[in-house]
Amino acid sequence: MPKHTVYLVGGAVRDELLGLNVVDKDWLVTGATPGDLLSEGYTQVGKQFPVFLHPKTKEEYALARTEKKQGVGYTGFMCDFSPDISLEDDLLRRDLTINAIAKDEWGKIHDPFNGQSDIKNRIFRHVSNAFIEDPLRVLRVARFAARFAQFDFSIAPETLELMREISQSGELLTLPKERVWKELEKALQTSDPDCFFSILHQCDALNTLFPELSWPINNQSWENFSHSAPFQKWAYLCSESHPDSIKTLQSKSKVPKQFANLALQVSEFIHDYTLPLSVTEWEEWLTRTSAIKRPQPYLLIIEVLSDITKSNLNDWQELRTQVAGISSNQLIKQGFIGAELGKEMKKARQDALKALNSPLIRHEEA
Image 1 (cartoon, rainbow, N blue to C red):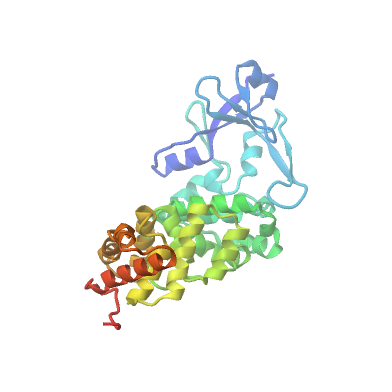
Image 2: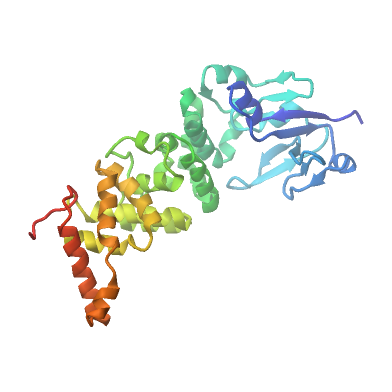
């Protein structure tokens, strides 16, 4: 058997051609069997696919393979890993032409599907009609749109049409909720997550996967949240949707707790209150959000709410500061206990807020 050949493939080659830093490298091996790599000291880690860790670098090396659709969803494939599978055979199964480029051990670029041209022209284009066999690719293209928003990529019309076909086929609903969330979370880690949702909307996937979300977001620009934490971006995305809808969405989508709590709190405020609030409303809301006991989560909430409501973050911080120093010890010394102590604490906080000259407070009781 001739010596096998190793290629750098996929995202690493794409990012290098885009002038981006290459973080993760994926390697492809043609002309080899699992036994060949094991004999060279590689460690097999893939169960479904024969993926191997390099004995020194620990980077992943995969045998070239072909796929044939056998069932539904993104896992319903039969794979062939025989050593006679060529580089072009393997690249043919990939999603986009920009991800179907390889570089061999001597630095030569192998580009059978004109991915370099599509990188130059900033086009997302499917490699073959096999694209339609994997519903996850709808989410992946949308995520690439968010990740590479700075480069102004567009989707080839014929590729967008295939994405619509997938959306209308019902196969998106076969994707595991965890896998959908993983793609969404990766999009939220970019500076332009709105691109992800815009693409899903264009190909009729948004209403299939997230029918509870109100889209588009109308109250302001996504740009204000470009550098926010991912869970703050998720809260902003959910802000115009009704709290009951957000509860349903987050429950069925298995949204992590850190994301879910903030999104629900932001949605509830937007739907339950209109600025300015009375001191009674502020005391109630500060208590509900545990603002006094948990200052850091409170800061995360008000960073989102102050942007959405176009108000001053310092004014929101002042609300907490004004009531945070009120202690129950003095009231206990005065003989208040149980329910009466709670009432007096509430009154003391409201009185403190009345004394605060803030544009967020409606002083109608004065």
